[in-house]
Image (cartoon, rainbow, N blue to C red):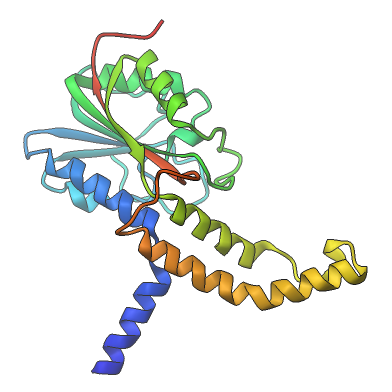
Length: 246
């Protein structure tokens, strides 16, 4: 029994992802603000990882379903620039890890503004640091100032904007990428003495990279370092308003 518990703890430690932890926490916060009579649209819902958090609400989901992956239950399929829904239908819209995949984010934010009820909320997350993914539908990365500009222009008032995770999680991800992606062949580093030295150092350091990566990732759960470096993602809550940035 003790060995089984220890194995589960080790497995949980090795598979822990602080970004997913903080994203679930953020969406749980959204779910806690909504009741059975309120409608929420999960825009770009993808696999539907967090749909279970909203079973107590009038939850609906949409995606364009154009990427080769497994999608969750989709209420309706559409391009987010043209959502086939009447104005002021939703109390909340979720747009998590989607905005980087939108070629025309301003048009999508205008649509979300249209379908939200007065004072309805947009719950959004998007990357600052992350590799290209879901090709060819990956277009942008966002600073906090870029997000502020886009949301203000679309008629939203931001009430909360902060890093989703801290720099420890970003560096953790970089270390993991280094372990996985950096080649071991000395010729990749110019060969000769320099290439051999780099190759040997990588061989020695990669296990330590991986260990430090996991330690930083788990520590980010409780202690986000946000005063230095960069986060992987930003999270924001914005309220629909009538004031638009010209």
